[in-house]
Picture 1: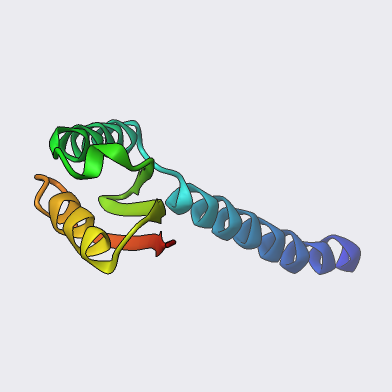
Picture 2: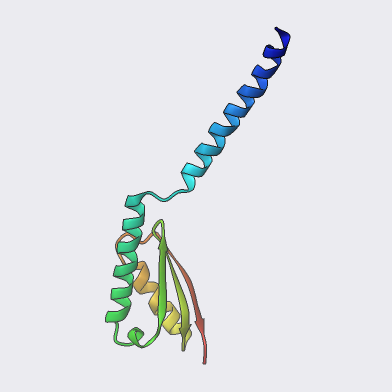
Length: 105
C-alpha cells in the first residue's frame, strides 16, 4: 500500500509542471487577430512610406509585432531616419517604432 502513496506526490508535481509549461507556451503565441492587425499596420506603413516622394526612393523594410513597427535598411541622412520614423508612428494602430535605419553616405 505504501508504494502507491509514494507515487502520488510525484504524479501531482508532474501534472502541475505540465500545466504550467502548457500555459506558458500558449501566452507567447500570437492570436490570429493580432497577426492580421500587424499585417494591416505593416501594409499601411509601407504605403505611407511609398507615397512620400522623398522616401520612396529608399528600400525600407517594415515589420510589425504586436503593434510595434520595426524599420530597417539604409538611408542617406539622419533627417531621412527621423522622417521615416515619424511617418510610421503616425499610422493608426502603431504603438511604437523601433527605427533601425542606418545612415550610409
